[in-house]
Amino acid sequence: MRRLRHLGVATLLISTLWQAQATAAEPPTEVLSIELSGDSSTRFEVNGYRYAGPLTFTVRADGISMTEAATIEQYLFGITEMPFSWHSEALAAQAVAARTYLARSLLGGRSGAEVRYGYDICATSRCQVYRGVQNVESDAGERWRDAVESTAGEVLLYAGRPIEAVYSSMVGSRSRANQDVWASSRISYLQPVDSPEIGIAPFAEWVVEVTGAQFIAILRAAGYDVGGALKLIAVDDPPEGEGRTTITVRSSGGVDSFLAPRLKRAFNIHGDDLFPGVLPVRRGGGRVMPQNLLSYTFEITHERVDAAVLDGFLPEEERTARDTVRIEGEGWGHGVGMSQWGARIMADRGATYAEILSHYYTGTVPELAPSVVPVDVVVGLDWGRASIPVTVIGAARVSVNGLSFGSIGSGEWVIRSTAFGIDIVPADAISDVSLVGQRRWPR
Image (spheres, one colour):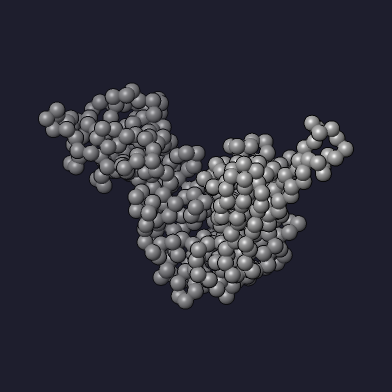
């Protein structure tokens, strides 16, 4: 057997790796998937995060996708949505909300990116933030593990089905109605409630100020039909619970109208690129806001003072007009459902996790419902990549196209695109080294 030593530490354990050579007349069939798995102590580090696996790397139209097959407990242990140092009742509320969110997400099956990349739920803030085992295995992780285990099997139900247990970092003084933020019908358990955050949560209240010219430039970069000087900002803000807020902007170069969430998107995509140093705003003590606009809950005022009025006592060449757009907002996130900071404050004041959940998801209580809680889940970790570096800690088994192939040891490896699909090679391997491409697939 030809032996390949990697980093002076790991030697390939695949006994037949180089024995079956493909001939020129019989090119190898594509390798469409490679799976890495191990025992309970094996870990895989990818993109700065550590996973227990199994990890599956699959050929897709736009590159390699990476997923992890996890049990429900393994998935929940990897949720990193709330600091583990917070009150245990707040952590328990988060655990039930996360379990419910997952159960609800899996009800309708896969669609869109889930179908294209072969997963049930993504690992980003678009779904729930999932970071594998590294955080729960940290010194503080035992508190989160306890929260998940102490609420095992508990979810929030409405009419016998898991609710849409959406949540955000903070909502300010009051949460939002789902129909005021999204294009959806009224949901009884996602209606506004008071939240005890003002003066406590770091972004319960915030202010962003830009000039009229900067405001117009951001909207124009986002594709809106405006330009030149800002003339007017009109806000159609229905009463609470009666629909979404529409903003109309009139400029010397055009008029355009859009929903309030679009303004947040425009500012967060284009603001700091166009005006670095102005956005994101620096607050007292030099702390920078984490986004240019933090929520959909805000009021807008436009103040224009002509140079002749403002600087009437100055020479004409020194006069400057003031044209300011002031956005006063509350909270960080969409503002619907549970506020994580609100949960923390309520817990610190003596509320139980059940009371927290019933407050933010009105009319619901945590209950055991094993029939709606999934046993396992496939998490979408990454996709659209030409290569994915993987650090293996411990022995790992390799499967190719669903067939057992052999084992590899600890070290740094790369899953890479090749002419025959994908391959796994040591990170420091020479270019012509191929672990699985020397065989014909399927065997």
